[in-house]
Image (cartoon, rainbow, N blue to C red):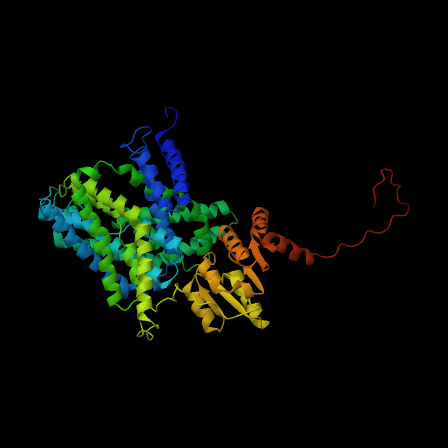
Length: 586
């Protein structure tokens, strides 16, 4: 591409091929992530044809990680983080410890030094944030208790890896590397601090960053967005959200030594308490998705397929540690902490892969002389294969979860105070005995008002909602509710649509609403289906899918405003009206 800059060609070719291979993977009932990785392999240096810029691609991918973690923070409050600390902190640390020990043993078997083994083991101990969050979102369990535990687990691993990345240059000499003792921090160099001093300084900087974000940031950031929102410009609001996400992440990395991803997470978390958080999440969603795809493309670019037949034994050992050891350790710890099988098996599958921090640590270890060049290929092969196999790991985990729940029988007694309550079961949903009822999909701002009106009219109602918090609240109020995705045939079967009076699809996502309408119409051809939409195009599509009536917000607002218009006073009759010559009526 002689006339295109490396930046433009990397973005265009990367996203274009990611779409092609992602669509092909989805068509074959495989996770689109597989297609994105294959797209990276095609544009990488280890395949013929066009080669994307290997420097720009990872940098673009880093933006995706920042925006993704910012979005996670928008849906994850400080209260949520503290509520899962009892499980996430010991679980993540135990899993990292086991992986580090096993990775060191594998390195020793390959003839590496003890220092190389420690760094190699740490690189195999941290799961990819992007992969796990995508898995949670695809399975609609992000807002569930186990989803919050998984996010807390990721935060603990990220904090631990930040400390490792900052301290590794300090201990490089002791581990057999070549870096000076205080190379990891310019302030430590100026002050002449040793290992203990650098450790204390690093911890102090992380604590200071968290304190600033939770003290000053939680007041300044929401206030700033409110000021911008009152300006009335959607473009400025979107720009402000991006500036906050990227600016806080960059500032955290430059001033406090915190990772870009962790800085963005805290920026989102302090904004989550504002009523503008939902709008901020919607504004950043398209960019988050686009740059997250570039992350997987950049990973695929680094993979050399020849490593598979040059080092099959070590790569198999890496896979065993990453997928089996990490997963089984997570399952063991989570189970011992009193969590249900659904949480234990989900985390076992979720942490059975490695990603972005593993690459960063490997590259740093090679630069410091703490890892041989061969380690890069092993870590990349382990990352690629574990990401490719991760959907199968989730499938296996779901089957093992079902067997475990079948053996347990009735649910246990409520946990002790302070213990996170298990989420409602999502498997083997019982079919409701309601008939003549109204099924409402979504308990958000619109759905909650519909539910309240139906309850006030004494109309039997059943709600399908993805948030376990909302489901528990509805059940406490005496409203029947099912936790799950309404597009799931099992969930719709539990709602007994054949005996229902009406279905009201109150969720704002037009794509998911269309899937719900299609599934419902197939189950009950005579069911009256109402839905909401934002545009005329969405309205037409939902009607084509089988909805009987679609309500568009703009139309209803216009009707309501018209009813309140002041009556127009009739003009006084003219003394001698002029004759009409064109045949039109007056």
